[in-house]
Image (cartoon, rainbow, N blue to C red; front, side):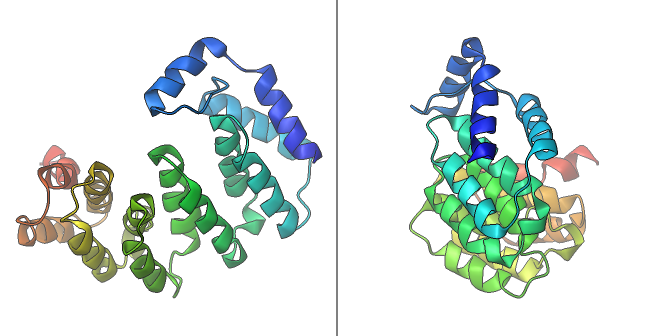
Length: 225
């Protein structure tokens, strides 16, 4: 595929081995890096979009999956850049693809991108959101359970508060750091829209929230006092 070949060749051309090792260490992964920061990747995408068209959903899906299974971490990032940037294909047809990416993601860097941007914005104001969130809450993969929380992250005034509250209450007893962090994060983000709701929810559920979740949830509220 010409687009994939172009993206990979540009990443290889612009690779910065002196940064790759530290990026790999930061993510605590054995997967190698090219050493490319987000601005460099976005420049490659901008250039690619001027030269290559993705003509249909099948090509969109194949391009993303081919990059996703590449050898370097930035191949995965580039798959998500493609998924996000080619907005005409971000329809419900893409949801099974995004769920496959979620279930094969291995760390917060890709999980959060998929959850908050691809899945979360796709299901904003969609009747599928409740059933999907309930399903993700019970998944054996804690990254998928994290998605049940972070899918709400960018919903602002459209946040389904009853659904968010039930997800938090169900998952709050977990000891997994990334679940506790996600609870605090999604509450902190929603507090920018509705601080009164977050204050009340945290007060009512203080006994079940971890110290991490509690602290993170109120961080923005306390900052603005």
